[in-house]
Length: 376
Ligand code: MTE
Ligand code: MO
Image (cartoon, rainbow, N blue to C red; front, side, top):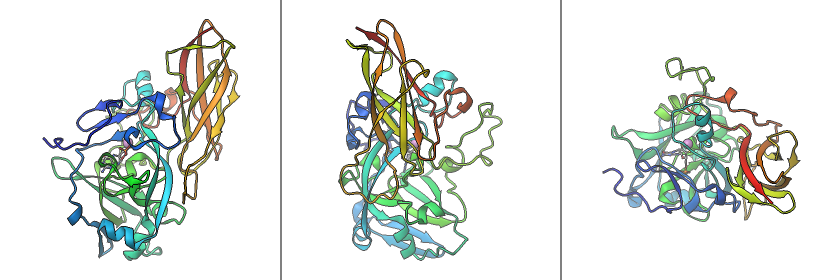
């Protein structure tokens, strides 16, 4: 059994698939703290968690004909450490809502395939420059990453990002060895993981063992034939994966964490508290979250909580904003609570799922709607 040596996981996680392991924390606890505790951070594994022999492990960095091999200790000693606080989100977050609209293919994630952590490591840029990467060499257009988790054909999970993201001084792409101050837990990539702030979760390759400068995107299945979005009318027969763009930077999203969908809420004064998260990719900050208690007719601006705890080297707003709002409700009936966020580029979320529906159920970022019964 390739899954015989999987790590321990908290029973509170909501399991989407056991082998490979995929699970998310309960929505009620997701927004309790700005930093998601490691044990509650969603897990998205495509393959078994690999075993590591740290003694003999070296990260391989290939640039043109040159090869640099670095142990974890060498990485820690040779390059300047930085800490980046970033939110990581799976492209399938909130897929459940899209699949309720119309069937899609993929794991049924709720709204918790997202989390925020402080990652400590060294800049990918520093390592690549050390390996002889020439910024003026136009042969290299992509930086590819390979993990140490392998399928039955022995091919590993992989992904790539464009050179400009990898090499820009304020891209904050790091090779991390710590997650929230401790060695990265096995489920999240021990001992090394690339962190690509503002990009889709899929490019944050765990169990990193190889970095390759290339003229092409990664040839892995997950770069070429997955994590792409098609028009609502595209079918599996007509989907042209070669033509479609890979998901990289993520669009603006938000979700309500409390109250829970379908719950009964008590209110003496006709007001209830609503809480949630909002995030946008590309380092775009959240500038406003609007909350409605009447299905989107009238809106109230939420309070944004942005206090990033601890020292941080981030050059952009890579992390989410938590928010809360007190909204007026009508007791004795169902109230439709809705939220929508606006990012620093004034991007906003689409009102409905229909126009963004896609066969794989990616990037579900329509207004988040829940229905609660209010009792007085
Ligand atoms: N890296 C490897 N090596 N193998 C994987 O299966 N899954 C990717 C990415 N990196 C994956 C990986 C996907 S799709 C996501 S959303 C994130 O890791 C999930 O990270 P997490 O499990 O730490 O939350
Ligand atoms: Mo993902």
